[in-house]
Image 1 (cartoon, one colour):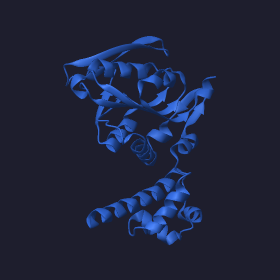
Image 2 (tube, rainbow, N blue to C red):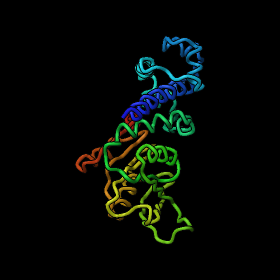
Image 3 (tube, helix red, strand yellow):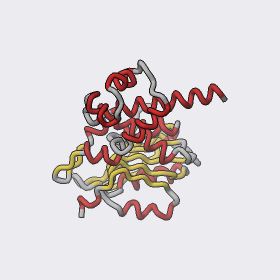
Image 4 (cartoon, helix red, strand yellow):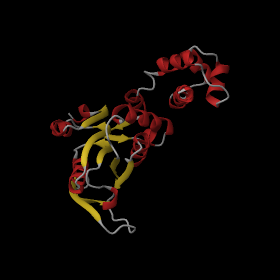
Length: 246
């Protein structure tokens, strides 16, 4: 038990160090600016961030409390997602490891108490998010693609219509990646019409697996959420931009 308590303490201390580095990177703060926010001397912050010293548990609580609102993922997305003429640029999010770590924490908070053993996404922009989700839940990753991998012979396949440009596309998923009775979390970066999401749900149904949760970074519509209300599925929309389409 003593060893367990020590490990739990170290985990909390390392988590606080991670929060310091995340805030510093995401908001491009100097140690002086961060010191003013946390009311912790610059010299100590620098030693914490570099791993030379771990904060006490009292200091850990201060760091968590004072960075809580700054590192709320919805707030971080508002500051880093670029929206212009209906186009959404997620490069500042998907290529920032500190924001991806915040997403991993969000997944753990929202879905860790569910029996999820598979994370499903559609290539390609959802892949960084799904990797973090898979790691957070200790679940296997399944990626549906618009082509057949040469390494596999047996696939689940679904087709659907996309708008721009109008065409029919197919998603292929190797059968060994999704099995009967798997508990599945779908991860998607942006849901606009819900068609890709519906295709992923169809893959789950074909495989005889169960949809347990849906994590969406940005939603441009509320209609897909309403359709899932009666399915006992946990849904987490981190940033709702459906008003942009009205």
